Image (cartoon, rainbow, N blue to C red; front, side):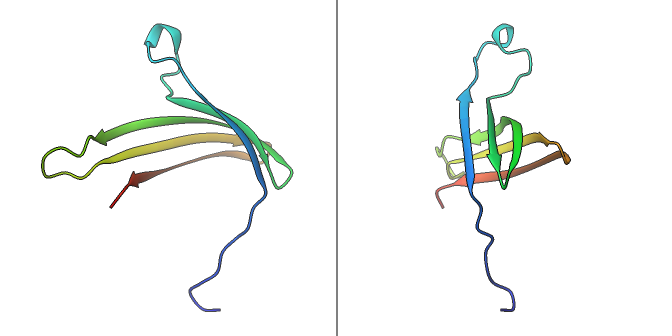
Length: 84
């Protein structure tokens, strides 16, 4: 198929929300997770980099980034959660 399709994954993970106070959270991360996908164990740190509460002219959204590691190496990425 041209320009279509999907990749099915089997994923198991547990995400934990970290402390809000910087003294209790030296990494500055918002959440962290560990899990297993396709036989690889991974660890990830997640960060909320920015957001809008939806008031005014800007719709509600959150900018999220992550950094992770498996035995195959490090990876990172980001995305935007939005209702519209």
